[in-house]
Amino acid sequence: MEEVSEKIRELRTEKKLTLKGLSEKTGLSVSFLSQVERGSSSIAITSLKKISDALEVQITDFFENVSNRNFHVKQSEHHTFRIEGSLAEYTRLGGNFTGRSLEPLLVSLAPGQPSSDKVFNHPGEEFYYVIEGVVLFTVEEKEYLVKAGDSIHFPSDIPHQWENPLNTEAKVLCVLTPVLF
Image (cartoon, rainbow, N blue to C red; front, side):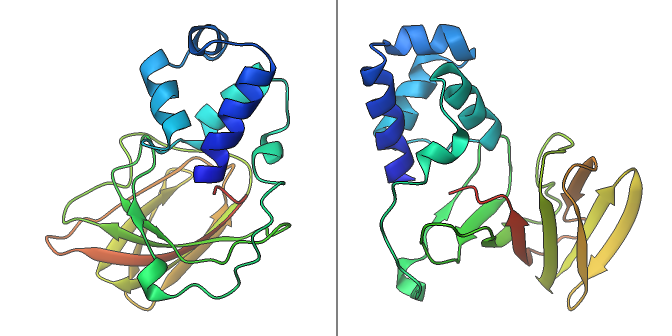
């Protein structure tokens, strides 16, 4: 995420745009953009797309110059974070190298918690394997009760939402495309 924050700031200053100017072009608040550039706030893919459009670059430009080739990710390097608009906690599990197309995450949902307060649809695909608990997925208005040991896999452009319907935490292995971080 740090590389993305730095790239946003670098491109904005190259284009001689103030935070206020970028705010006007994206519809995102100046304070939010400032937090993103400082790396103190996470950013949703939809917000990053607004920024890339305003800066007239491809969204992939924020990730292409990462020269890190970290294939092995130790448990001590895992960091929990939240995504804008999501109520779940995420832990990025994958390595970091140019050209990767999968985003593996460990997701924790508190008891009775939805993953988000809205229904999503976006390009790509999603795979979930429930490690602990039960997760109720709603995909294209059909409900699937996915228990520990079960999985679900679907195209992300179908409207979808998921939640933990029980009073115990749920843990889910999630692998999705496109790469977010």
